[in-house]
Image (tube, rainbow, N blue to C red; front, side, top):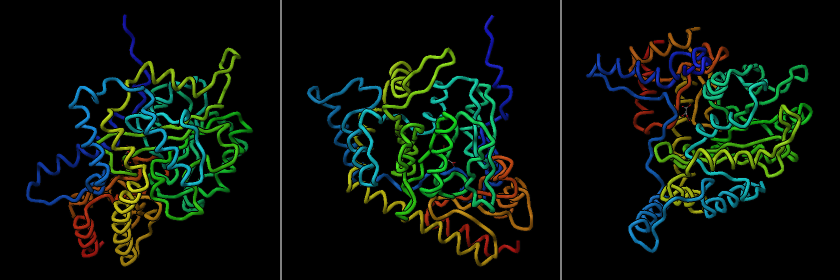
Length: 399
Ligand code: MLT
C-alpha cells in the first residue's frame, strides 16, 4: 500500500501567490471592463538587459552547429558562470571559491531542495513576516518551526534570543516582504548565535542587488567566520529580471560540516554536490550564458539601470503614501513597499477593497504570517505608467 506524506495535510490549501492569482482571475472574468493594475507577486516587467540578450543569442547560435553544440552540462553549472559570480562577489568585497558556487533554476527551488540536507529532527527558526516557501517546505518535512517576530519596534529585523535553541535559521536580507536589511553588526550577532548553537543559517540574498548603501552587506559572507555556519541562496530573478528565464545560485562553503544523528560528520558542500548531481541536470547552457553576461561589469551596469527604474517606481509609491499620511516601510533596499493598511483594516479586507474599488492587486501581509496581519505588500516591479496610475487611483480615493 502506498502511503503519502501526511505532512501535506498540514499545509494551507494553496500557495499564497496561486491563491491571489485565482482571486484576481475571478475578478477579471466578472469585470472585463476594469483595467487591473498588478502590484502583487514580485514579478519583473522590463525586458532582459541588452548584453544578456546578445549573450543568449550567441549561445543559441552555438547550439546550431555541430562544433559548438552542447548536451548535458555539469549539474552544478558551468565554470564560466562560477567565475563570473566569483568576480561579482569580489567586486562587493566578498571572497568565494568557485567550487562553493552551485547554479540552479532559482533560489525558490534551492530553498526547498536544501531541506534534503538536514535531518527532520532539526528545530527551524523563521522570521515572521516570512517568505511562505520557508514555512511550507519545512511543514512538508514535518519539522518543528519556531518564529521570531519582525515588528516596527525592531524595524522588522528580529535578532537572536539566546534562550531560544534553534538548529536551522532562515534570514532574508533585504527582506521579503518588509524590505528591511540587516547591518553588518546585526549579521555578526547572528553568526555568533549560529556558532554557539552549532546551527546553520540559510541566508536568502535574492534582493541584494537593490542595496545601494555601502554600509549594508550584500552577503552573509561579509561577516568574518560566516563560512563556518552559513549557506547563501541568490537569484537572477530580481537582479537581472530572470523571473521567466530561471537561474539562481547557492554558495555552500567548502569547509562547512555538521554532525549526523548517528554521530558521524558530513561536509555540506559535498552533500549538496551529491544531491544536485543525483536529482538535477543543470540549467540550460543558453540561460547560463545570459546569467554570465548579467554578472560581468557591463551586465551589472545595465541591470542596475533596470533596478533604478524600479526604485523610482518605489519612490513614486512612497510619495503618494506620504501625501495620504499612510505608514509604510521598505521601498529602499528592495522592490517592496510594506504598507500599513489604512483605517486599521485587516490585510485581506484591504486587499479586497483595493481590488474591488480601485482594481489594484497587492499581496495581503497576513499571507506572510501572523505579524503581517494589518499590512499589505506592494511591488515596484510594475511599469512606470501602471505604477503612476495606481497611485493616482489611491490618491483620489477617499480612504
Ligand atoms: C514574491 O512576490 O514574494 C516573489 O516574487 C516570490 C518569489 O520570488 O518566488
